[in-house]
Image (cartoon, rainbow, N blue to C red; front, side):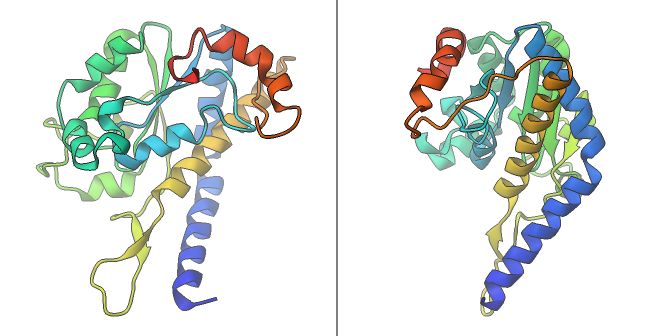
Length: 252
């Protein structure tokens, strides 16, 4: 193993171990909320407002071993596939979140998991504020270290200078270090090896599994997707598809 790959592996492993050690209580609290919403036959709405944070949504949406009631809010405006720089501009546009909430019909009594590695851009903060206005329970997955080190006047910030972790009902720290990339390459001033996707995906999978455990504790078998690539996958997924395709925008 090279020095570079060893550094990358060790750093990722250390961060994931920190999440497991320090975020158990927050994850448990969030999972209780999600389990209750599933029992109410509501959806687990998940949004990643901006760039690669969308990957945190995709990690738990229509996913082998994932909960079926996850409603992945994959707005085209902030998705990199429709233009990386365009996504960056839109995530910095105040008020855009309101239109997304309307498009996905989010309202009172719903729950929304907001995944954003940095937790400072306009779309992210507006998601949290819009939840408060509409009576939606908000769960934030983000990094305090990153948010606390970015100046309040930075162009990437919401005009208010607010941080996501201060403006949600439940906050789960993904422990992302400042700058995201963590590996120093000899002869290169910019670090490489980003870790935000690992941080967000690990948190989200822990949250989904704990939610399933909460449901089982209440005597309810959680609806979970099987890989569609398995021979029995289509057959096993049929009931979930029939129930959730009419309710979840991006399932079909």
